[in-house]
Image (spheres, helix red, strand yellow):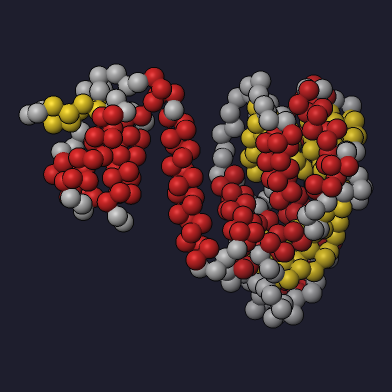
Length: 368
């Protein structure tokens, strides 16, 4: 790296440490000599970085006392902390983009990969924040179109409300709604006795609570397989073949409920399925496991299979609903979301994702 860019990088690093409180007012900063060893550069480069910070009013250099953090940080610099952090994040992102573009990936591939990676991190968020005026909390089943919808609607259509997403599985979403830890729950729980989705489970988990169900979409669910389906897997019966490694969704997910019910009806013991206990929290994580060769087959969304360039065999069509209390449904932000979903724009947005049927998107069903 040339001296011009290096001194800017050194100044940015020290600036962040000051604004984030790692160096306090009047703290002595590392000497020029120490920083030369750290950054492998000349003293002139360090001195130039310190001069830049001095012009900004962040540091003071005095003969015999070295360089210190200013006794008070200029207000303009303090208020710009988030801007600086964001600029650094953009810089890191551009560095990553340059690396993967050089490796031959295009922008659409990179964006898709980032969305899939973010799916995984959303499953790690287990402590939803308390409800505040400008935040809605979602908990429930993983859905790839839901991610995109949240970014689009709450980022471009309704900009003053944030949707916090936590993927917990369908049943986990209903329990979070019951316990006041979520405002919206995403669920696709199939009941074998009634051959219907969600309503039988709502009556068990949230009895006597006035609820609204708003359909996000009907989704295509089936077997996700390695490209070319080298092991010739076609049905659920094939899962018991000894050479096949399965990867599963977690207990409580709508996908797992459907699978377990079907296996029970076919008298297939889960003990005979290699990998049945190997669980993933999202459809994209399941598909990635197959793409990386860690498993041969799993049950998941067609959209996840397509995202990873995998084969797919259709098994069923399921309904994915957003569930909320009647009070939440009447919030202005939620009313705006429901109206948008039922509009031509909303259905068109969800319908861009292959494997989604939007005929009933935005349909409202009231319970209780």
